[in-house]
Amino acid sequence: MDIVHIASELAPIAKVGGLGDVLYGLSKAQVKKGHRVRVFLPKYDILHVDKLSDLKVVIKKEIYTLWSAEMEGIELMLIEDHHSEKYFERGTIYGEEDDVDRFLFFCHSVCQILAEEAPDGIHLHDWPTAACTLLLQGKILFSIHNLEYQGRCKRENLEKFQFPYDESLLSDPLYDDTLNLMKGALNLAHAIVPVSPTYAKEILSSEFGFGLEGVLQQNREKIKGILNGIDTDYWNPETDPFLGYTYSLSKGLSGKRKNKLQLQKQLGFEQNEHRPLVCSITRLVAQKGPDLIEYGIQKVLELGGQFVLLGASEDSEMQMLFERVQEDPNVFICYEYDEPLSHRLYAGSDMLLMPSIFEPCGLSQMIALRYGSIPLVRSTGGLKDTVFEGKNGFCFTTPDNKEVANVLERAFSRFGTPEWDALIQAAMETDLGWEKSAEAYLDLLR
Ligand code: ADP
Image 1 (cartoon, rainbow, N blue to C red):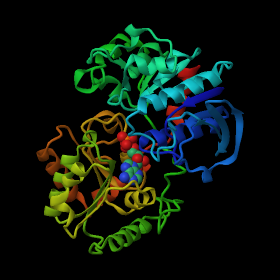
Image 2 (cartoon, rainbow, N blue to C red):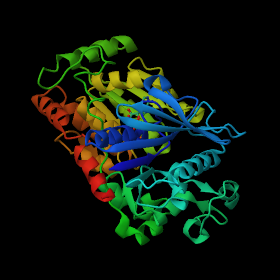
Image 3 (cartoon, helix red, strand yellow):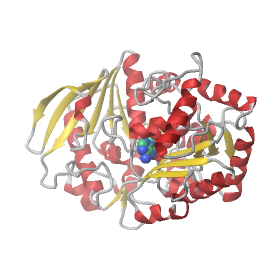
Image 4 (cartoon, helix red, strand yellow):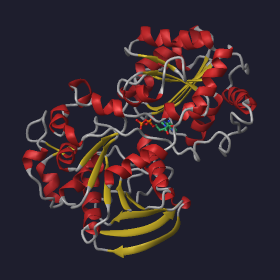
């Protein structure tokens, strides 16, 4: 099959969160199955082009240049903009005031390129690519990685780039005089794919629908939840180049213990393999339950553990939330996005705390499972589909301090017992690869 992905992220060259990982893992799985896979992506100034080979110009137009490149069998199609606003030269992927225009420009350019073609399937990902449904013909899948971000805009935004549109399909359900790109895609795509079966059900309710639950209910027959996987070659504790010591179930876990001791030393913690080391690796936004993480840190200290928070955030108010705990000698906090450190944390920690308010799929808990760090999660969305109480992790239902305290107490009481070893084994044996889900996507395209 000839498959086209259109996306705003692709790990490892342009990643903000799980979306980048999914594009990488799914595309690679489809390439492995013998399909032709192209990924259209903006040519951001921050793109790690050193990881690409064969970078060359395909077409040069007044308003954009299309570049092609190759990455592990995936054909990359990169849109460089020549717009006076320099949309992709902002030193960032998201977070600009004109994000809607930036991604409308991207969508419009890609659609012009694809106008002459008829690939077997076109796969769009989240609101930045939603506007492609207004121009493209053919079979279109639209994946919902996160319904919170919807691409709200004005008529003028679409008119600026000459998108044709039917206002009734795009009018925002919550705000007057506002269009909603995500809503348009939900109405126009042939299939809607939330990234886990549980999230597919949750978003039909007002608690998780962010105002689009009605639109989703109307399009119910097109919805099919497909669980994300992780790329088990990239996320592999047996070969991970970022680790001081590699390890696996078959060769033994002494490497994991050594990684923990090395991490404790690097972070200035007491080096003691008997003290539980807990981490959170996340974008620090309301969705991820930052106040519950902060409470979790206090509780871990009370229980005698150590805590590392790798929480990407440029928001000083968010950072202030952790003021109370950040000076503690048993706490280390980094507000950066740090890929190598994230690998060392998955490998060197005993537990990962993930108290999400909602979680479409969640990859951090899957990576933690693969590295034998036991996830403590709120059972919602994909967390509910991947972590099971007492089997490969610990779960709670209500996102409040009491339940966070309980889950930590339950986990700490098992730590260091034979039961804990069985948990690590089950965690590392959890089936997390893309094999099954890539097949489910291909079935939909067929
Ligand atoms: P989301 O997509 O909502 O951010 P996921 O759990 O699906 O959450 O995916 C998060 C991905 O981003 C994982 O690969 C995780 O390791 C990575 N990540 C999150 N925060 C950081 C950070 N501060 N530094 C490095 N990697 C991070």
